[in-house]
Image (cartoon, rainbow over all chains, first blue to last red; front, top):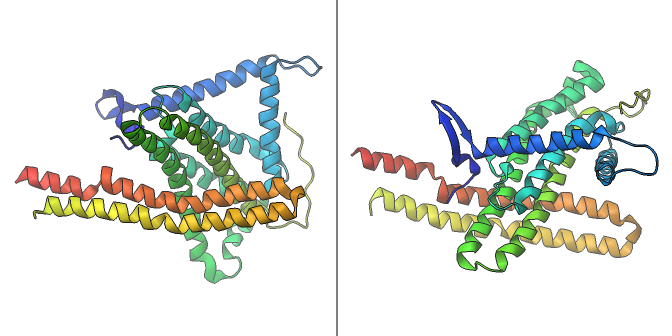
Length: 233
Length: 93
């Protein structure tokens, strides 16, 4: 039994391999970016608008509201990163309704890459918000003794992010595979529906946790309200 | 018993024990979390959005410990490093 779609190799030249994970990721990226481009090509502001524009507006405002609820004050600044994470993971698990599709998030390399993106983005947003010294000082909170533990938590939460997403996606595919060999008719369909729900919840969790980490890195001083940045629409 | 058999038996038994015992704690914890959330929902139906969101995040965090156990047992069964090493040693003999 396969543990991840990494082991399906579509094309190989020397040490350069093209496995199913990379191919599916590229396909998802293509679908997401071309779809967004096509929808945003004809945007309207009056009462008649296309149903796709409605869909996109619901998605974007929903993500924005969730980010704001976590405690980040200017969600437009972070929606590029957090929204992309959510949309990619959600799309990757939604597409499991297509037969023969293997979610790229069921491979540890994809989830590790996403978690590493979060690990890099959190200090970047933190430094941008409170400067290099201010961000580095947050490692010494509450006392300097906590410095090694803060660094350990930085690494361990990245590991936890990666393994959580990987484990959930992989276990869904694995359980369906095992059930197909035991009770091939009705029950795998029920588990597929449950897998869709789990995938959406995991996408939500992944982006919310990333938002919480960014909020923790940027939200140290609350007393000085900054000027409202220009909304980049 | 040669070393291959010992590795196979140990991997399978430990994989079962890992998932079995590793899911007990998260199961209790999730039950308590849901029960508490339901109590809170019954007392304050207005705050249902916040309670549900926090409940989902918390459940996923609790469940991830069970998922770690599952990943470890899957690695023990399907991607066991000692098994491959022993196979390579046996083939080299």
